[in-house]
Length: 217
Image (cartoon, rainbow, N blue to C red):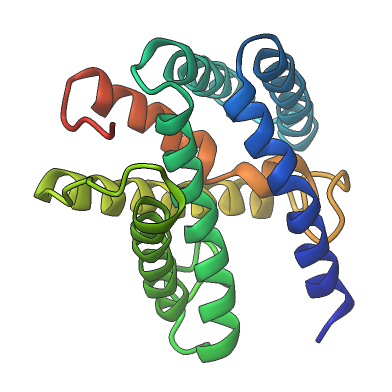
């Protein structure tokens, strides 16, 4: 087991409870956390895309992405549960993709991100579905949720967009000839390396949920 893999696990164990607490606590704590994440991510993007013609597009997109996270946390019924489920899907997708890709390897998914495999893609979908079902069945006070077709489709879509976001950021990193966007998180690299899928999944989720595609609560 590589040192990088161990650092990745330890960082996740340390960060996940803190992030969950801030999401649930909300208001001042969550907003402060969001501001820190936004400026750190923006700094990493601008540093990575310096002298690139896509720098401004990325700035606009990240601004909208973090705005959508704020709106999801503060404007929807159930507040923290909505953003918690989206975060759970994204994190599970990332972990499933990483673990399944390492174990099964196999054919590459795309040249845009050479480390991505079909096994990792399937693993991302599998763990995202499993995690959300487990959460509602065993970790909430109410286990009466009905897994309607809309919810199943929503999990699939968010997981898909999260994986696409990962690939897109990987492409821009290759264009910038860097491996990681930073070094702030041991085993993961920069903050943007860690939340690359989320910055795509949250604005997508906000648009979908704002149009009453499905009610998670």
